[in-house]
Structures are given as C-alpha cells and as structure tokens.
Image 1 (cartoon, rainbow, N blue to C red):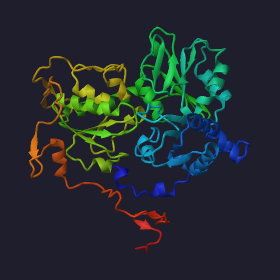
Image 2 (cartoon, helix red, strand yellow):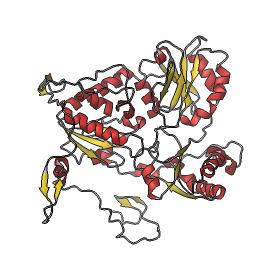
Image 3 (cartoon, rainbow, N blue to C red):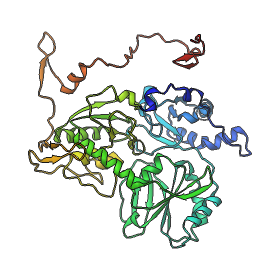
Image 4 (spheres, rainbow, N blue to C red):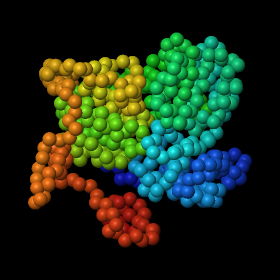
Amino acid sequence: MATLFSNDGAEVVHRALPAKESSGRTPAEALDEFYELERAAAFVTASGFHRVALQFPDELLADSATVAAKMEEATGSKMYILGDTSYGSCCVDEVAAEHVGAEAVVHYGPACLSPCRKLPVLHVFGRQPLDTERCAGAFRELYPDPQSRVLVLSDVVYAHRLGELEQLLGPEYPHVVFSRLASDGAPDCPQGPGLVRQFGRLVAVAARRGLQDYAVFYVGAEGLALTNFMLSWNRCPFSSFDPATGCGRHESLDANRALLRRLYLVERARDARVVGILVGTLGVAGYLSVLEHLRDTLRRAGKRSYTLAMGKLSPAKLANFLEVDVFVLVACPQNSLLDSRDFYRPVVTPYELELACNPAREWSSLYVTDFRDLLPGGCAHVGFPDTVPGDVPDVSLITGELRAAGLSSSPAPASSSALACRNPELALAQISPAASFLESRSWRGLEQQLGQTPVTKAVPGRRGIAIAYEDEASG
C-alpha cells in the first residue's frame, strides 16, 4: 500500500526550512534584492492598487511578514499574505485573493507562468545565485562542437543570469539560442516562422524544422519543469546544469519509457465507463472552457462524467469515489503530469483523455500538457469527426475484452431534460443525474457553516501529530 495512505505526518511536522546562504550583504539588503521589493512596490504604486495579495510558497513563508511590512511601508497599501494554496503553489491563487478583495497579486517563488483570468499579477521568482563561469564550463564540456545547435532554457529563479551566460557563450557558439520569459498571458503557440512560445518562454529558432534540430540545455534542478519540457519536446536530446551541485550532465530520463507509461494510461481511459474530472486550478485562464470541452468529449464517447473540486489531491481523497474508473486532471502544465502509481485509480491529462475518446485525434511525437492548446482555436485542437459510426468494435489491450465505442456525433444538449416537482407550488427544477447519484453517497465532507462560528483570536494549539500529541499521556 502506498505510504500516502498510512503516513503519520511526522516528516512534515519536524521538517526544517533551509537557511539562506550569506552573500556579504546585510539581511535587509539581501531580503530587498531576493524579493525585488523596489520593483514590486513600483508595480503597486504605478497602478494605484490599495489592496494587494502576496502569495508565498511554503518554503518562503518565513519571510512573508517582513516582506508584507516593507511593502506596506513603501506603498501605503494594505497587504494580505496568502499561504497554503488550494492547488499547486506555482499557480496564482486568484480565489484566495478575491476573498480579501485584492485588486492585484504579487506571486513569489517558482511559477508555471500560466495566464490568469481576472487579476493583474506580478511574478517575483526569487533570484537564486548562479555561477555563470562554471555553468559555461559545463556547457563547453557537454557541447564541444562550436557549431552545435542548442537551446538554453532555465528555471525561472535563474532567468536573471541568462544574459550574462549568453555573453560568455555567444561569441563561441553562433547557433546557440537563449529563451526569454514571456509572462504576459498570450497563448503558448507558435507566433510566426521560427518563433516558438510555450510554457511561458519565448524562443526564436532559425532551423528549418524548428526545435527538432536543436539540443536543449536546461539550467536548474531536476523537477516537474524539466520533466514537462522533456515530454513535450521528446525528440530533442536534453542536458542540464544543476547550480546547487555545480555539475552538468546529459539527462538520462528515458522519455520513451515515460511515454509508454502515459500511453498505458490512455488505454485505461478507453476502458473506463465513469470518469471523474478533477478541477486542479481555479485561476488559469480557460479552465471553465476546458471543463465543458471534456464533458462534451466524454458524452460523445458514451462515458459518464462527474466534476470534482477537492483542492490538493491525495490517494485517500480519490479513494472515496470507488465508482470512478479513471480521473482526468485539469491543472497547469507543470501539475498535469501527476504520477498516479500510488492512487487507487489512474489520473490522466486532458490530452490523454482526448486520445482515448476522440477518434479523429491520433498519437504523434508532440505531447500536449497545456490544456488551452486543446480548445477550439488552440494550436493542437482536433474536433470530432462529422460522421461517427454508431458501434465500432474495439478490443482492449489491457483486458482483451471486446468493447463498443458508443460514440455520438450529436451536439451536447443545452440542459438536462429530466424534470421533477421541487415544491408544493409546482415549481420545476432541473435534476442532474450525476448530482442525484452523488447525493446518495454517505460521504459529504466538511460543512463550512459560514457566519455561524464566532470570530476569536488565534491561540497556541497542540503540538505534534494526531496519534501522539505532546500534551497527551503516552500509552
């Protein structure tokens, strides 16, 4: 059984945050530079924002109160600290910001650079140190040929040093291309010949076949961002430089093995009859459109669907829905590739669900992790065919059983046709079959009881974990 089902939480309780390295500056100067307080204050004052939300990831929360106080002093505006976001910390938590009536959000720490729906956002990544001389040396060892075509990418926390790295390598390598951050929310699709925009990066390539003619050199530690790039651009050989260790290497991640795992999940989605649509973001632009798109796709494929919003995912949460055969996660590109080996049911991406349900979409070497590209008008959109056979025999590659596609070419109905009497005045209400089914379940979750609980000041609580609090007698 997966450890996430039985973990007692002791690791989280006793985990210590790493201390920042000293750079010869005073703590106040280091804080101002790391959080770019001058630029953030200018963003607030230039637009005249009076209520601003400051979003911090867990590892930076220790500095949140100090940063908020400095921002209030510099701008005269009210600052609100957002912590413990409902979904991935790389996404902007617009919902929490709207709870306090914030007019803008300053997002600190690593970010996926997904465009937001409503609020203006300033990204402050946190400038991590990078030894550009050592990085350039590792690049020369990995690519000794000066005519090599290489695209240089970086984690967002090292993007501020790419200009210096370009000055070191540009004269020696005429065909090396450096990416630029593009976080203004435009669609992540090619924008003209030789110009590629994806995952918040803007790349100008001169090769005939675009990125396929380039190797990729990534500056940053191993993680979701690197995995996302490697799966999406799986025809490009990758190498990386880890600034923490100062070592460069050719990436040994077997992209083919990872793709085989994802294709297995596609086959599981083809076998599924009941699909749970997991809402993994409430802030990325277009998430409501893709939810409707997935519902229509599943309806055309003859599958039942339920939409579930539950914040951060865990195997224990999803195990409450035993009737669901497979889940599809609507999240930002970095959080979409969820490793579901520890889950009771597999979790797929919207692209993988389309591969399973849309007969017009065929597998290609390009892997799509941004759900906005699948929508009408997106660079990877594929509509359902105009004519679909009623029953197409198919054999499952997992069970070996014969399955019927059950495809439908008719458009989705505007509303449910089921009507029921709701009150003595004979008012009619639409009844959703999915909602009726879930109402029969005994599991309901927590009741918020908004406005019924008196507001009190925070007091010190219990310390420890639930199985053994420090103030409880042992045994």
